[in-house]
Length: 211
Image (tube, rainbow, N blue to C red; front, side, top):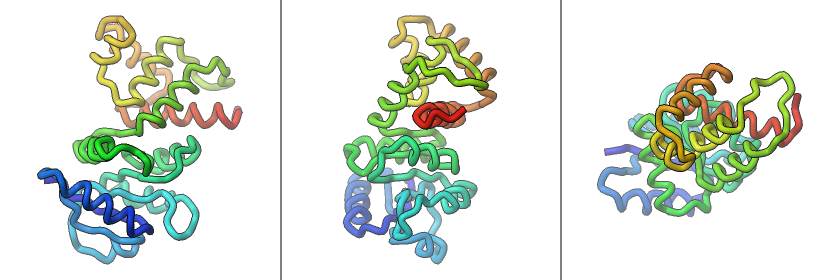
């Protein structure tokens, strides 16, 4: 059983998520509230926190994500699909990011993936990421990846396994493994979540033309 806490300042969103998740035998919402105070004031244990990026303050919950990600798995949900918002959430420690207009099946998959220790990104956001990674924009002073390494990184960001990437790129899994090791060495990152965060970092810096 995956125990879930939902924090969102819109009552309709909270109840909608609870209704959706309770339809599945392995998912249970044990807490819902409109703000972080509701979470801190509860002694109910949970496995995943679904957290609205923008609560009543109108500012992204950067400090809260950073604090809470140290003790629980955080899945950010937001009406915003802006790359800058995605990046600030992921860099603060979120384990996943989905938009509020995402299909119900995607949200359920995101909860399960995050609960199992994985990283999840909405498909639409991954598409944006891939388009940006395909851009020839140079990154002065940053590790340069080959076109195939960039393609591999974009698929990793979308949640594909090495075997799935191999089929999409029409290469062997061993070659994908080699690309991934090269990427990790160049970007100085380790697991899939760190790779995805690095990809998002590159994405947003390109959009804002940072050196």
